[in-house]
Each structure stands twice: as C-alpha cells, then as structure tokens.
Length: 336
Ligand code: G3H
Ligand code: 13P
Ligand code: ZN
Image 1 (cartoon, helix red, strand yellow):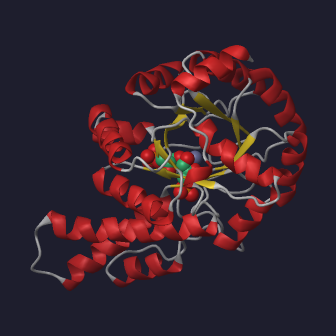
Image 2 (cartoon, rainbow, N blue to C red; image 1 turned 60 degrees about the vertical axis):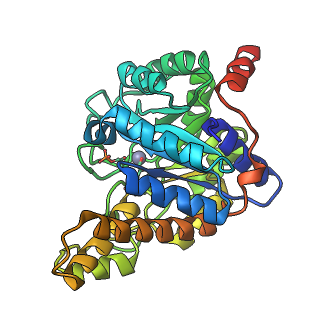
Image 3 (cartoon, rainbow, N blue to C red; image 1 turned 135 degrees about the vertical axis):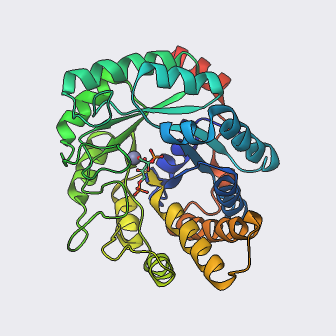
C-alpha cells in the first residue's frame, strides 16, 4: 500500500509517546535487486518501509525504470505500507520532478546550497524549505528538511564539515518552514568511513530536540553500521576497505530511545551486495550469468535489512500505520 512518509512516521511518533519507541528505516534503492531485497525483508518481518531514491539513483536507473520497479513492489506487497521518498533533494526542480513521478515524500536538503557541497546559511535554508513545504503539502506530499551538516563526502553529497544541529535553532526552523520531518546532525556521516576512533553520537542533541519538538519526526542520516562480516567478505575476496567504520546497531537503538523516528541506510546495502557478489564470483569462477550473482546480492540485502527492521523495532508494525495517502494528506494539510 502506497502511503506518505508522514503516515509511517506518525506510527513511530505515537509509539514513542506511548513509551515503546521504534524507528523506521529508509533504505536507498537504485535497481531491481535492491528493491526486491528491501520489500522481501519488509514482508518477512511485517514492517512498514520508506524506500528512498537519490538524484544519483534517478540518473543511474533513469526515472521511469526506477519508479516502475518501486511501484511493482508496492503492487506485489499490498500488505506493506511503503512511502517513496526523494533523498537529498537540492532544488525546486528536483522536488517537482519527484512529485510528478509519484513520490509521496521529499527531502529538501537546504543545509547545503544547490551544488550539494557548500554549506548554506540559515535564511537560505528556511526560504527554500518553506517553498518546498508549500508546493509539496498542496499535493499531499510529506517533507523532510535538514538543519546542521553531516561530515564526510560520499559521491559528491556533503561539505566534508560537520556542524551539529542546535536544538533551539531547530525549533525556529520547524516553526518557520512547517516541515514534517527534520534531519539533525548528531555526529554521523555518509559513506563507509564514518569514524577514525570510537564512534561518537551526540545523544544529548537528540534528547533536547525531541523535548523541544515533540511532534516533529526526527531523522538520522548517515546511519549505516558497516557490519564487520561484510567488510571481511569484501576484503577476503579481493576488496580493500580496511579502515571502514559505521554506527553500531546498539548506538542506533539508543538513538531511537532518545527520539529518532527515521534512520537512513544506504552504505550497508552496498556492502551486503558487494560482499555477496565478490564471494559468489570467487567461489564460482566459471559463472557468467548475472542472474546468479545478482540473486546472491539480493538475498544478502534482504538478510541485512531484516536485521535492521528487527533492531529498530519496525518488525510487526505494518498494521500500526494509518492509511494516509496523498489524497487524505492533501485534505489534512489544507485544514491546518
Ligand atoms: O546521501 C547519500 C546517499 O547514500 C545516496 O548516495 O547519491 O550515491 O546515490 P548516492
Ligand atoms: P549511509 O551512507 O550511512 O548509509 O547513509 C545514507 C543516507 O543518509 C542517505 O540519505
Ligand atoms: Zn543522507
């Protein structure tokens, strides 16, 4: 069932308010095998899911291929609430294109300028985010904004500088823009190389922001765990990723307790797929049918995402999601 991300995140927020917090993973998709891995994990654990698409994914797979692959998964898994979300939208054009394609949720990352590299100032962020909220809410589409910048640079997204979110400024940002969800910078970063020493997460920022903004869905980007077993496979079968380090699942569970509702995961899907393909090809040197190694990658992705759905508490929550699609939300936003 296609729903807005507001529907899915509202189920998480309600659970937080009732003292049994869980978060929803938002998983990046670029091709059919990733989509199949994600939806299989959701079906096997009865989890709602946010499927997110970057501008890079739209370029790689072409808009039409990708949206039709995602829609096929929605159609074949009617019992699973699925939101289709634009990850790190950088301009009004990108937002309009995603909404025209049928996305039910968009992120406008106004923490960076349109080049997705240069940090913006607060007023720029408020202005672009407010414009997107107006446009998207008129069409029933949920909006995520970002305040503060994540460190790290991955595939051209990111300034390389960390600026942790100021919770008081977050209140002003949410009041002035009307965003549904807010990505906060808490010490994570995109990609596989997040920490040089021990992972450090600013739990106090989550706690304070949650206190000040009890009705806003809080988002943690750059939240892959970079599991040791995938690094080991990759390194064993010819790869070189020795210094990679992510956010441990235990730290993510703690972040959920403090108030995180949405957890973005892309890198772990890449690692699971690459480890499986490297292993398969090394163990089957005579193999040349792409279906054989892509099948191995699809199974590894499903396993990895199932682990997250269980750890984040999303498992079993499919039935808790209100059926808020675009039409319901269009009316609801108009009323407010
Ligand atoms: O935020 C970055 C996501 O991991 C998407 O990465 O732009 O390489 O698709 P991408
Ligand atoms: P990771 O690189 O940690 O998977 O983060 C993905 C992300 O934040 C997408 O928006
Ligand atoms: Zn991100």
